[in-house]
Image 1: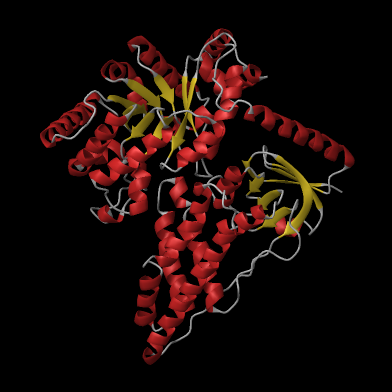
Image 2: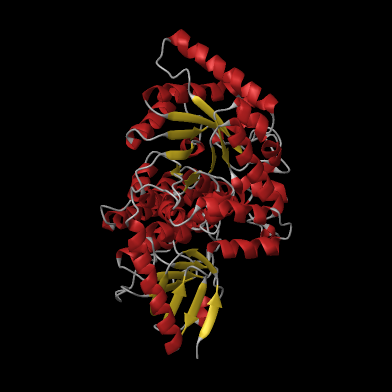
Length: 576
């Protein structure tokens, strides 16, 4: 008899294969007393465990294929960096001495402290990085009790569907190396390691399938539908036939999409659409070029600061941005200025002042930069210097008023004077734009468009601020809806403001990369998309199979609706 389990589909695709229930050994840390005269010996035991854990990860990294993209290897590298971080070593050693406790317990106490820091972060991506801490601690714990961490069984995993409570990056990469068919985990979300790696590796994956290990028998046949988050156990002949057909269609579709690499995005009636990529670091351009030889519509510069955990000087920023520009080989690069604050913090500024009650609406992005102009000036100078070497634009995040824009403009003028005084090469005419990501900015978009060279709609924040909900909060996430009439009106107003002022308007939020909304956005007049690299071909395919002129009238009808259910129904018809 078939059973159907539901979870969160985090990596698209269909897989059919036999289950392999992967059980990792768990270690419960118990506290026991260590006399003061043995503290040094206990600390040495901890240091040795850290060293052995590092050796294990290096061994795993060496087994990974040499052509594995850098952004995937970064997951293993981040764990290696954690093992070298004083937060693990010095913090745990201090606990051993202070409480005269064993290394396992000290490490667990330190782990709990670090996890609490991540839990308090507002940004959902950074919040899920507590998984890194937990995975690294578990590896050290296994080494401390002389239990080698469970590795892949000698059983052949090729074509198997892995069922687990959760997977570490090392687990995921080693299983991908053995060509597993899919992943199903009991825990995790769209931003978990399994989700991110599975998407990057192109492996169907479903997370959040509670009690999967108890409900799925080892070796039983499964169907995994990563598109809809459905797991079917012991499927009947009819289901198998249906999903085999869908899987075949998916393979054919993927091959067809690959034919669009480096091809133009043009609607059937001849409207050229620009589709660019979003990146966090220069190394991401390698992945971007796998899908298209296009430019970058959003370079999130804060990752450079977060990875260094401090403010980065002008020269280091200049070299990093220049490396990104040169890797693009003549294609445009839009650099977003620093979006630090609230959940995205660096050590240098932590602990300054009381914690904000509502960090998402606190001192972040351009507000933070204007309050700390001595750091902002370095970035402005670095960006303008890089702009002398190619097509570089500067984008300001989270502007809410013209007064803020005037302050930014004054600082840019000041940066120009500094560069002239230093007789440094820079672009005096660099194009400057703004991200429209709060309702106030969208409502003022006509004024912004008159004073700027371009606008870019950041839908992630725009939707959350408009609807006053956190889409990651399970209690209210059902309210997060890009098709809410108020959200659509703000998007339309921004697009129309750009057309009136004859400045380009792009969209760089998740809505731009979701194929459900591509035709609607085309109908609303959006001609510029900036999306994650792996979404480029899907969006391009829809563009190439759409008639923009016919979509305009249909979009106008949708915009005249005030009922979300009716809007969703019309959008479904638009896509059918």
